[in-house]
View 1 (cartoon, rainbow, N blue to C red):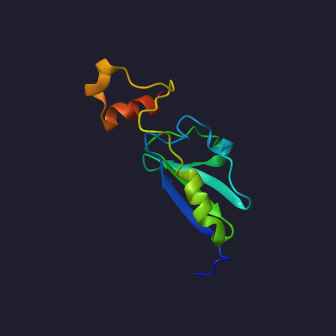
View 2: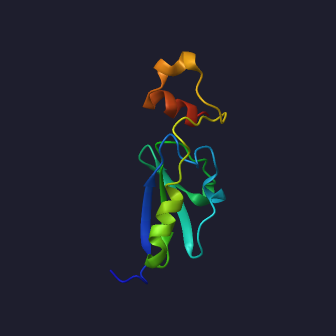
View 3: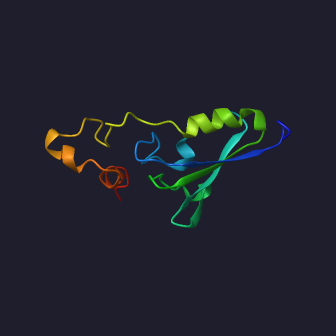
Length: 111
């Protein structure tokens, strides 16, 4: 692969992603990198539609110069600590038994 060639990056969004709840076009990217859109439930949603990122989505981005693709990928994989919630506090102790991936997905993907 030539480092000067564009490189497509696909990043699945997890429940603790720093980008859950953000508009896709609000992500700060390195120069010559662009978000194209995201996929959600087998649908393509273009960046121009201003989608809000949810866990389970896959962000599609391109680095116009392949040499900065690793930096772009690292930025898009940014996460919060596991015990982060949408309220930016630790889970209450009485909900400790409810903490599963489904529970965390519901916290992230509120409509």
